[in-house]
Image 1: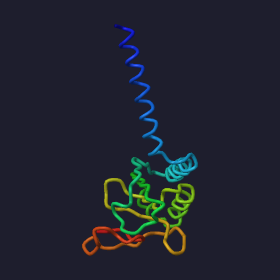
Image 2 (image 1 turned 30 degrees about the vertical axis):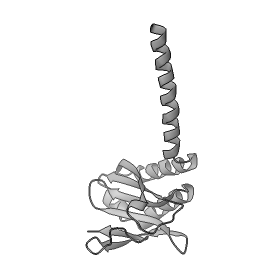
Image 3 (image 1 turned 60 degrees about the vertical axis):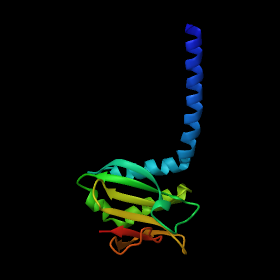
Image 4 (image 1 turned 120 degrees about the horizontal axis):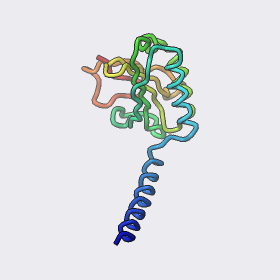
Length: 156
């Protein structure tokens, strides 16, 4: 009886391992992309009074009607700390970080930097037409369509 239970548990673990591994592969970024995301996190936090408390991979098709179809994801950094405001206002710094991530992550077309648990967000992405990385323009949520055009972000 003990051997049957042990064998059953081993088989269940193997099945779980393979199914988890297959699911994880579908969600994981490449090694180069993961390195770029980690480097960005380190660069933002290094010698600053800021901490990244949340990162999210987001399917942009839920919010945009037009976007780079071969790059369906955005990566969001949730920041907190005294230096958050100055980091979010540094367009050059954030453009550099977003450019590195987008260049090294083939499925990402947008990088967002958010003051965690607030509506303060700065969004940078691959601009259609000229293949550069730039800041998205703010459009008032009250007049914005349900799904935005690429290059715009809804603002309050």
